[in-house]
Length: 372
Image 1 (spheres, rainbow, N blue to C red):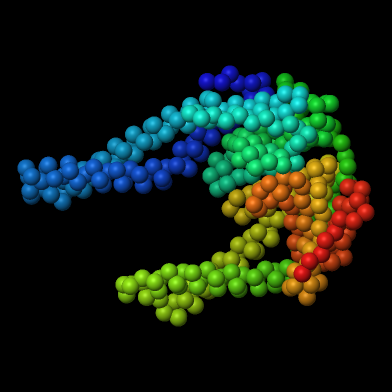
Image 2: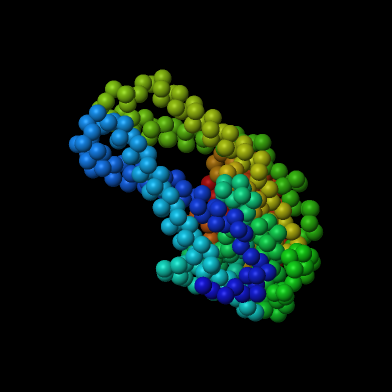
């Protein structure tokens, strides 16, 4: 068991992390219990039936239920013990130069991320996190390992906010002015004012002033036509590949599947647009998005590498553009999820305004790229 660091005591994991770990694996454990219980029931039932043939079906059902419950309780208990050991061994600390995170029971890993190498900080919640009211804090550098290992998951909202503020200060100051590890969470939150301002005044470049144009929905719904068709063909082909009549799909059923998929994609698009927001703050760019999984990204201006203004074919027809903001961490991931900020549906003049402001901040003379 690792001795908690002062930083860890100041920013503790939430007790709800244990609950999340158990709940997230409960369905898998239940499935495994059903399989083990079903397999184990066969020889036991055979022994019972050989003595009392009249109780065959009833014995099978009762033995199955009892064994499934027994296996589920046993596996959950073992997994609960593992999770407890995992949380006890979970260790993180903040020194003058880098953040250290250690995790694992049987094969522990330890990662050290220098503050000067951190590209961005983002906070997210999956469905279970939202139900339990906890957050995960991620730190991205220009390596694949940081995206996998460099995160402190399962903390309460106040702790997540304090960790975010601490790391953003460290990214700006490096080791020159570290935040006191003995400070309270409220002091950590108030330290926002210490961060060096590089960007515009808050409230100027925001979703409110640069909303996603309604024309963007036209392009999105048009793309959904092809996406829904592709998924429908895959589903239809799968069912037609079966030889039993129950899997026979008619053209009418294909159209119904397509309609359901298209409506689902349309609703998802509308929900994403409603939850998307961005703001150029004095210290960093803030972006929030997500439907089922909520994310809050914080990208300091000093880590930015590229600013692009792009137009697809439909966007050119509609007079719209997409602003893409990248840093070095994006090059190390398949999707650039942690570090790429995309601001879609901007009229071309609005898109140019955003790009010009970012170029002003970065001191660049040219940072645009346009593609068909």
